[in-house]
Length: 300
Image (cartoon, rainbow, N blue to C red):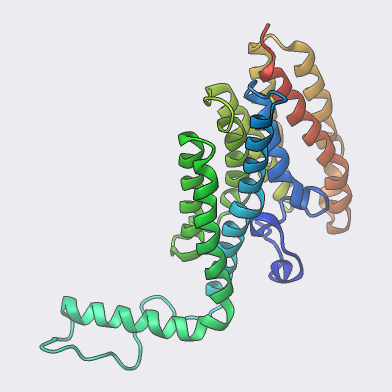
């Protein structure tokens, strides 16, 4: 599976530490757009001062705050993967001696782990100190803002923060999978938009997950068949949801908007043409999200 170049995060600062598309504007707009679609799908928006204020808090939470936390976690993990810290299982050359400590005992292992962390911090501090400040500061402000939007928003925000910390500090390999970096933030952004104004419902959750998978499928650029499956199948589910909601016109429009992903798939065979592919389909995906959100909002 193709991943982002190692220099991508050095050259550009993207929301959530990743470029959701290799071309602008969706390299930075995707989470905010997903949040707005969630707001529309909630069917609770009204042009009142309270709604405008909640919209502001939600955009601030989804973009700068959670984006900063995820970006910081991404940079910390990137630093660890570059081999700037001690490898797993390696013991420091010198371990602080604790009184009455036997080699191999629990207290000895605790001292070894503590020395490991201190040694890691001394080597990593010049690189990750800023990321750690962003991680902690972003967490505090994100929870404070989420508290203004209700219990659902607090729960979704807490889940996003846990994922961001896991990305930065866990040794699990699956946490670095692109589906975590791409699909999860966009799904959470939609859910935050909905939860900020109304109680979440299963249809909105399913649609949010489907469009998040579409973005993930677009990220897999060196596996054409698999990438198209991840793009086409979730949109097929969205179309089924629209038909179940008695929205055949919108379902037909989403089908039509999704057709270029198949027609232009040949562009994915060469790296030079991939930018053109994403440039061509990103607005189709954006309009599909908007139309679906409007359809979910509609109450016949």
